[in-house]
Amino acid sequence: MESQTKDRLFTCDYIFVCISAFMMSFSFFILVPTLPLYLKDTFDISPAMVGVVLSCYVVAVLSVRPMAGFVADTLPRKSVYVVAYALFVASFTGYFFITQSLALFILLRVFHGFSFGMLTTAANTLVIDIMPSSRRGEGLGYYGVTNNLAMAFGPMVGLFVISSGNYTLLFLTSLVTGIIGLVLGISARVPRRELQPNKEFSLSADRFFLKEGVRACIAFFLLAVPYGMTTSYMALYAAQSGITHNAGLFFTVMAAGLIASRLHSGKRVDQGYITQTILLGIAIAFLGGVGEALLSTVSGLSITAGYITYFVTAFLFGYGYGTMFPAYNTLFINLAPNSRRATANATYLTGWDVGIGGGMLLGGYISEFDYSYCYMLGAGLILVALLFFWRVVTPHFHKYKLR
Image (cartoon, rainbow, N blue to C red):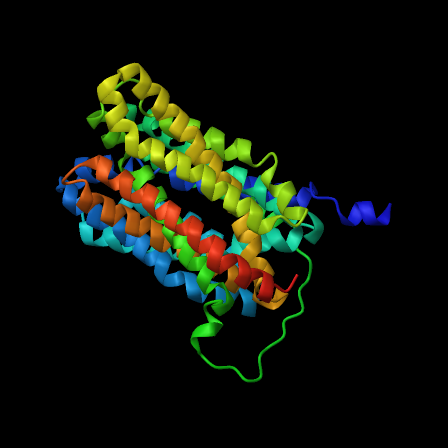
């Protein structure tokens, strides 16, 4: 009975952190498709300038990741989480007042990006502290579903809110959901962690980056590039391919694939099949990538076949990435001592963020020729990641894993 209690996953604290994560992601994703419209309507700037303004957020997130892991490993983790969450929520209040100066808006986005980067690193580590280690893969899988649900519903709600042009209501919705998430996060109890200060403190690179995870980070970067291309340009690619009706459902179907994958992937990770689960996920994502690359050709032959390819591809792409996410997160955690969990998470998230940003920039450049070239490259990168993970990352992980 005591062992069963110790291995319980769905405690109140775990549920609070998961719902809190959903509120955090929802308040973020509700702005993803709407801020470009807000910038155009409010500041009357060009699409190119909109891209520059939005990219400041990504740069800020990337800049703070390594420091976030170090801070969360050095200071009380719950305190770092609460402070970062409070700053993240407070940032939303700035959108109500900064309507005249684009420079101030950029500074607000940078500040918002700093708080988000710190918050997501601390949150990912906090949920690992709460869940039993025997069910870590399953727990990370369910935790990841909260982000997938937010990704599915946030943009839809955001576009619905601004359909009347009411941007004040949009920012108010983000602020309120953020406050609810903050309250739930504060309510979660976290096991007390004994801080062990390093007497030989130095600001060397390995204090901010898990060097044992470099190989895995490279593979994750390669996988993130096509993901960034998909989230940024798929709607435009669909229009080019003749997919004009219900094209926005691509991301809903993709989110369904992400969620469906969590029904089994986390449990396989807990059974010890970490690298096997990641390889399976990459292989399925590759099939989705091939579908994306062929969409334009298939649609040219038959628009009905194009629609089928479009939505099947969305599900495969989501299912593949959803399968590998909890396994990949667990792989990084298993390469680090418990005292460096946050650094491991920061390394994991940095590889993803750099890849997403690279996908946005690279996809924007290549799409000037043809959108299908983006997804041909994306499928190729997934295949390279599959081979690299199989031949390089897998043996390295089994040699250096700590648990």
